[in-house]
Length: 405
Image (cartoon, rainbow, N blue to C red; front, top):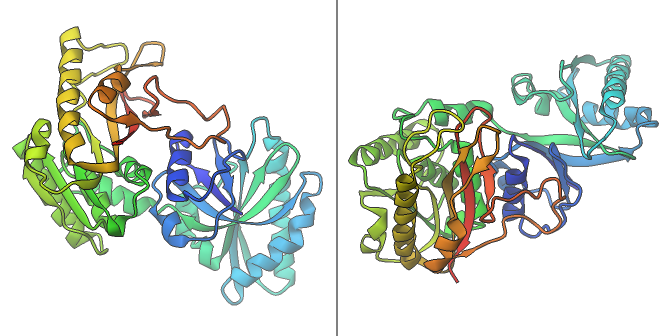
């Protein structure tokens, strides 16, 4: 059984995991922190994910009252993972259910870790326990202390009546994501920047197999989706934007990624073109479309609203663009699209009536979540999409999965 520690947008993370591990249907054991699924170990698929913090395999189960019973299992596992003569390990605690007894679990976990450390020393090991002021170790602590190869990072997943022990085998590489986001040569904060992690999640939501699929981003901006698709090994990648500056930036960024990120990358085909007439550029239908549309005039603070004319201009742009996009997507093909939504003064979001307009041009809005997603996480936008919004952002993103019949 495999666990995933979810990112800041857990509902989006569950949708992504379900798309990548499509053979898995049961997500009923999920919380805002973690998801537990029956899935074979598959390092390549785990490392494709953009919306998780870490992942691993469950190795034991007990109850909170009997947590000390894990001492021998944990000690033996650390010894088998450690380098000769020295063991460095960490132990994180995550909630697997609403109302889980986290405070006593964290206290017992610290005592367990210290007793394991003593046992390792008694066995002749030089042992170090990497503790944290928070219940869970940050990714940076796991990676900088080389825990996965030096002894292990372990998790206790706490539900109301049981505790699962897992051993982490994959951790999101914070430095690699940061380099792709902040290290790329061309960034245009004014026109909006799709975060690389969100671009990766959206690409994964298509459910496509990269090596045998073609991808189009008709609002490519500075090339975030194109870079992520290239790193994932898509067979063919096409990008376009109406802005000549955006296309120049996209070319510089994708060339930088190819030369600087130390990974094989598919080079994209990039052109200046209006998305409203993309069918005039793309001659052969593509398998998937992944894009962030034009988000509208800049909004500086929550509660600031667009004019009725600006709303209608956006809807007109979307209708015309997606009528053209429909023509270049293969029958059965999927488009994953980020549309704007706006934070109100009370913290909720205002949305456009997207579903009606997209269905008018032929698309079906696809259900993004498995049917077994817990009700507390199964939150959708009015058009049936998923919300992505940073805590301080006035403009959020509504992620819709569209399918051409």
